[in-house]
Image (cartoon, rainbow, N blue to C red):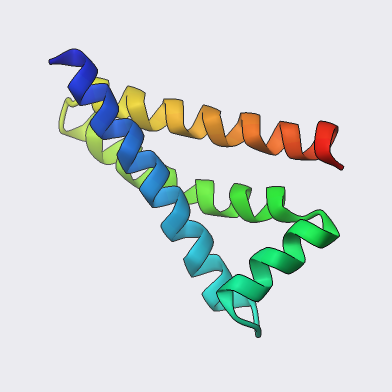
Length: 95
């Protein structure tokens, strides 16, 4: 039961991060989603896009806390930590 709740929170965090990236690109980019992602990978600012998308994780995190769904909030936090690890790998290893 607890693992299921954490997984739901983790999945919610990943999905909200992806939605945040898409919304950020939709608002601030003049080119298509695919072209923006390709350009960010080539020019080394994919980590910045992931960071901007991760900001949206605040919403489900605090909603889960407000509803006393602590394990789901923990899953969202784990998704945010995964995003931070990916950003670190992109900054220090790949580039």
